[in-house]
Image (tube, rainbow, N blue to C red; front, side, top):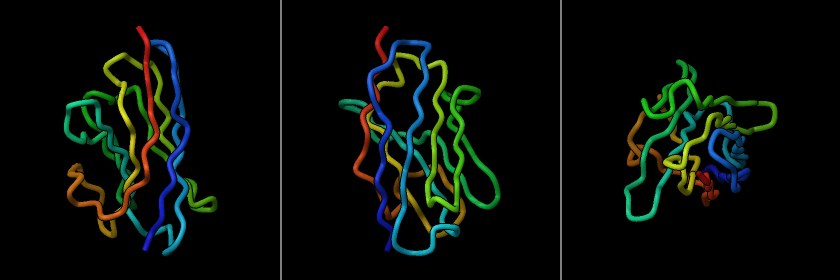
Length: 121
């Protein structure tokens, strides 16, 4: 079992930055692939970024603006979000799976509770 707690969301103006954190506990942290997803009102859960031993992957909409990283010593994954846009407004979730990183939320059995990101224009 893996328990995930995400944090770091908030209200920011367009062009600003935020860093989300996802603290993991439970089963050994260094093995799982970790992903960030987001869900805006009346929309499905959307892939943002993921990281595993083979590297990291990003949605086209965030490439060049967002960076995913992990600190295994702290059992924490981060999502640095720069040049934020109003369309980035959503509830952001971190997720974990015991295999390579993928873009499908259905592949991830473990989820955080979500942290709200609101970008004003």
